[in-house]
Length: 302
Image 1 (spheres, rainbow, N blue to C red):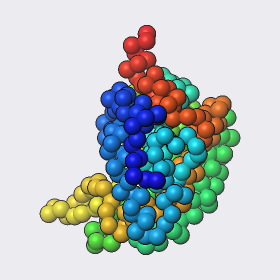
Image 2 (cartoon, rainbow, N blue to C red):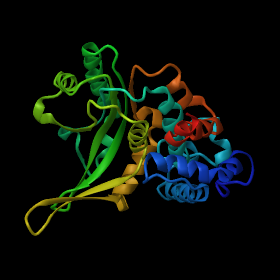
Image 3 (spheres, helix red, strand yellow):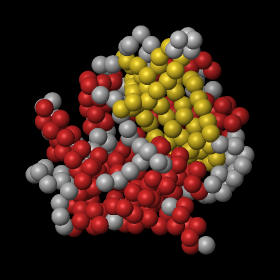
Image 4 (cartoon, rainbow, N blue to C red):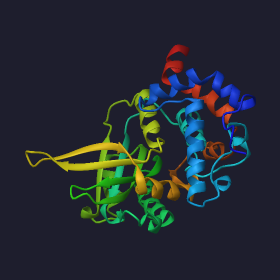
């Protein structure tokens, strides 16, 4: 069933035929992104074998091949589903969000009390986490009724200077029509000041289409990353980012396999119908919208 993930006909062949256009479109948004039908298919096959090795039913979590992807949603651990969601975000979602607007920020939130040591990621309660953050957005909505926000939950692994590893849930948000002060006030309805750390990019300047696309591509990257914190010879902390491996990587994949991608999203005041298309739109149309929505295509159309 899993031996020919790429396939040589139907949607699989269509994607393979257009893969250079697709790759160019998503790399324009975020250079770390790429697209290759054969590479994704090979990595998916390795993931299927991993599921077999740990005694999990791959058919319940992963797509069997590109030609059956429109039959229903698999888990967030599925590489084909990850590409589908990324293309949706850079096409349909991107087109639905206002561009060249003031007061838009890309914010990353980290709550230090959400951290879990390696081996305990299964204890992370995604639903409770989302409910708390949804209350923050509801408070922000009261301060700014026209506010629009979409966010993704990311699970990072962090290696501390002593060598131990912990998992750190983070929330990446693109927020439209809200100020720094309003966001801070909303956070303080749920968190004490010492409970969270946040960083933001953006300013009260027009936010270009390419910048928005970059934020969405980053939010939908779905990479198993390890942040390493080391101390250099000057006793200064240094940080590096690496691909997660070993037992921590297996733990990350298994956790992702227990959730659908839409479960990792937090949305406030979504553009009408956008989330429905994430659930049900066929992949070829999603990709066609991606190719039409990139900043290059929009510039060329003017």
